Length: 422
Ligand SMILES: [Zn+2]
Image (cartoon, rainbow, N blue to C red; front, side, top):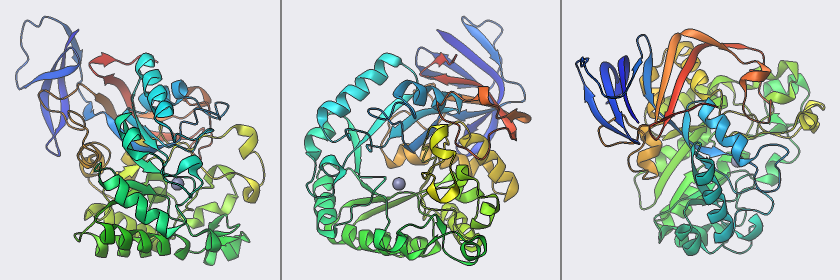
């Protein structure tokens, strides 16, 4: 199938520019200035629309196998496309965990058959995610794993973390660590501080995260390995990352979109849909996260899409599981963030397109360029989206945005040159 997507404002080299895109098969074959009279194919008028590369989310929980009542591969990949995400990386905290080449391979094969969003798989760093014995990273990499993580849990043993970094680095792959010192976070449900006292909720001190971030950075620089710090949420962690970069190891970091839009103060309604781990930052820490994002200390933005069944979240705040869904709100949230904090939308988009593609070496993705995949999102900044129950393709609804209206609307998504209909 051939398409001419014309009259849109196309994100090229970090700027929106009026261009026309020619798509042939699964690739972008040309980017042109003129509107040709004859075009052998389908024309799409994108007047008034922003055209953005398909988003890349490097942190999602798709729950298959084992927790299909929360989400499965099909509903997760459909949700991704519904949110303009054409590449999604899933975390291995499933049941059983994704700790074997067969598990990675079968998930990737299944995604191929489904032919929805592109799936990348992050395999477990330790067998059964128990933190005791490393997985066979070589064969996992051969099966297609793009990184190793025990996410949901930290790699608590520093010696195992050291060995994981050494082993993964021989395949040029990262160890993605969920930094949380459990001896400090204990049964906390929100960030420890003024508001946890005020609301009467057990707190998690910021040091629960930052002590492990410091440890991991030291270990990455010791081993010349690659550590990718998952969902950074504190200013102290930001400082460690900033000082740790540019030495022997490779250090990269992500921030979750919710941490850029919510603070600890927002828990005044005790809404379990807002319960997240790591918890919402203080306002001061949020400013530091934004600054770190803008100066490149934090490399990418992720969703940490964490679906749960309604009955699991319909309990009191302190008893509810952690997690917020994010695949279907990410782009709208980025647009909201750019308006709220007067940050360039283009710059924020880089953090979910070209930056993750470059960091994780995804050839032909993350940019709108000739010979790149035609992974595209058409976005109308003047329209809005009401996030009703029926808007979502995810099985879960655990988001504080349920029922709310956000500015901007995804009008069309193309993945590998195919228009998405879901
Ligand atoms: Zn995590």
